[in-house]
Length: 409
Image (cartoon, rainbow, N blue to C red; front, side, top):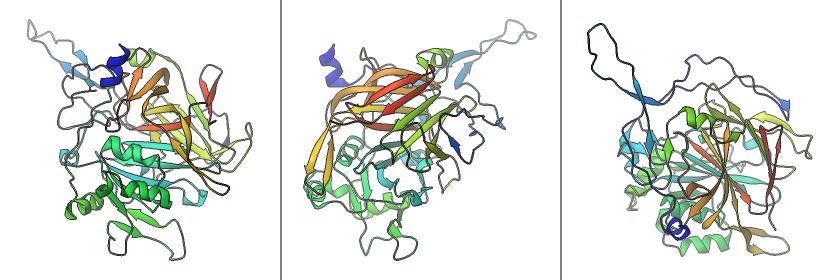
């Protein structure tokens, strides 16, 4: 059984018909608070409905109405209808957007003055991982939606090669260390790299004061068009690997409760996600200042493009073996080896599942599986991945709060 999982990822299930999407309204936003805290969501203007379809059977008499029979929607991990985004399990408003490559874009999270960032709420997937000096950075993957502005864009790290390969993505970034850049320029994805040049605005433009550093942004529609115009293959890739399942009672009650997820990378970088039952999403709050454990202060993290608080339908914590790509007295560059398989924790609908991540080859999209190798269903929508070292630890407080502490050997 283990060999089969290694070769093919999670086992596949048949994919039925289309879904009905629900309307989501985020909870009321607070200005500042100290962890732990309990979110008090506002009453949404539209109450979300279960993601179901209904099949109506003929009535025996005109006076008797049939009872709708719910059908749970499942897509993936191997087959998706052409209009369904394989990264979110959702029907897209513009199917033409799926006829291109995803775009992976490096987005800064430090210094704190770069917040709120632009465009993160429109990404299908976002990865957060450790850089150095207690700091983290994002890689946002855009596919089913475009964003008019994404950034501020910062430099690449060697970990980004995993994202480029498994999404077969275009990669937009603001330079890199010479050792990383040499690796990228010798790779088979070198033609999919987009870096700021004097002649490529748009799509990579400086917006803001000339003497400021975090001023590089892109527009995803312009970015996709740019790589096509310069002759880079921009055809739709095969992105199978994830399984999605519509809302059901089983989805709501399986697993253990997980209403708050706190992730602590360092005294400088820490954040938490709080589950809101009304929208069925986790909402992100970011550290307001550096603080030791137990003295954290948080602020909601917004998207400056949409004015929405950052939220996730699925939150996946990945424990990944980590070593050094390069180390000297003045420089540390980490090699986060997201290949093979490892431990994962999957959060959705206020529940958590001990799981594993599987990526058998560089070209394979990451799969999330139960520990027995079966595909673990995610809820249709966006996913945030928290990439922690394999030696990271966690504790559960009051049966509902999960605290993760980043660690590498």
